[in-house]
Length: 286
Ligand code: GUN
Image 1 (tube, rainbow, N blue to C red):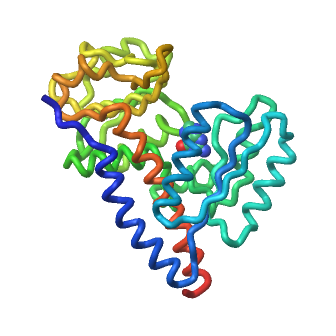
Image 2 (image 1 turned 45 degrees about the vertical axis):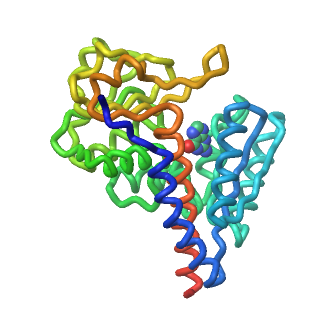
């Protein structure tokens, strides 16, 4: 029987302390503010954006939503980002990805002011994170590290295998595990013997977006298994990248989907927004 890593419970605990920080900042005249920009009407993105908005409201963070048609031009989007960069009551600017094909995602990410880049996607923030001098930590990988810490799992000296090499999760996740002294391997679609590499892992992080890719045969007895996957099945149900029912009996700890990594991602976004606001307050000398 594995220990189930409860992201909902840990999120609630962290959000409780963030709420106090928000109240203290607000009492000093700085209400944290987050702007979320959604282009087009991808249903999954809409759900994420809604959850971000609800998360802000519960903590007393001011949030603004910008819902734009998929037909918006890149120039118009860059103008909006520029306006939000300058908006004094906004501490965090988040442009929900993916963007429609005619928009250069990298140009948009580069346009966000690094000190409002609460996703930590801007090259300056990526560079700072890699160098071990982060301003903001990327939300999903930071949420995974919090779950490990809460469970008393230290990556130091452990074989850590990350499946997936995205800029949002896989690459930064590998770097955060490395910073905690893990021996890190990144697997991807061209990896030979994926099952063998995964089976070496003491800590296995799956972040590829393929339903139940990780089967029991790919998991070492006693491994810590983290499932970042969030896949919608044809019947409408949600499932992770890990075959939970088959893997759980072999794992020492495992995250469920939903209720594992997902809530932690939003919690880390809220944490980054509060940090950005605290920096603004400090600049004002309050
Ligand atoms: N799309 C999927 N995950 C994320 C995220 O963490 N931030 C943004 N901006 N877009 C996403």
